Amino acid sequence: MRKHIVAGNWKMNCTFTEADELVNGIMEQLEEKELPRETQLIVCPPLPYLEMTTDYANDSYFLVGAQNVSDQERGAYTGEVSAEMLESMEIDYCIVGHSERRQYYGETDAIVAAKVDRLLAHGLKPIVCVGEVLEEREAGRQLEVVKRQVEQGLFHLTAEQMQEVVIAYEPVWAIGTGRTATPEQAQEIHAHIRSLLAAKYGQALADEVSILYGGSCKPSNAKELFACADIDGGLIGGASLKAEDFVAIAMSF
Ligand code: 13P
Image (cartoon, rainbow, N blue to C red; front, top):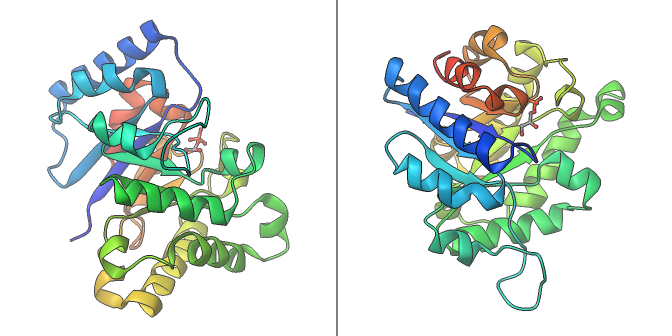
């Protein structure tokens, strides 16, 4: 069975003290509530807080992910953080191709593909984000856009490598807008992604890849989204900054 995953993307939020409080809040919530065994919780704080978060998590409460990684291996790339560094800190996951990085930092499908390669070479699992912008949805191009992103970002991988990848469908018009995709809209794209994987790698492998939904996911709508056949969890932005909401979402399977 596919893993259920709920990952919190804190984006560029929290001071060190706030981050410390949030991690502790999540651990308190997890002590109170029993998370189903098959649900994997992942916390993706800003880079400076990775060490603090991994120290607390100690692999027992949740796994830790980074929000970004360099597409280069190592060397003179001021300000960048490499997959090798993340590996050396025992970070498990890393978000790649988030729409905010595609939109504001020029992350192309080719860069996404290179980052995925770096991560896999260092034993990290990429959480690869795809999703159409509003104009593309209004023009009925969402299937085509997501297909291009999946093919160009991931289809150079071997089947063995593909098994390490998590995909997140995040319709850009639903991110931070309070406008969530309906379960039907999300399920359609998730099924589409899975059929692309099946055509390229076979149904058995496609059935093993976790595909997460992201975009204004909150405790009040997580249940109906996670009930969809091809939605295996969520990539949570705003609601992951409140420990109670984040854990409530993870309890929504
Ligand atoms: P929101 O949950 O704030 O809409 O953000 C979703 C997201 O971008 C997660 O990566």
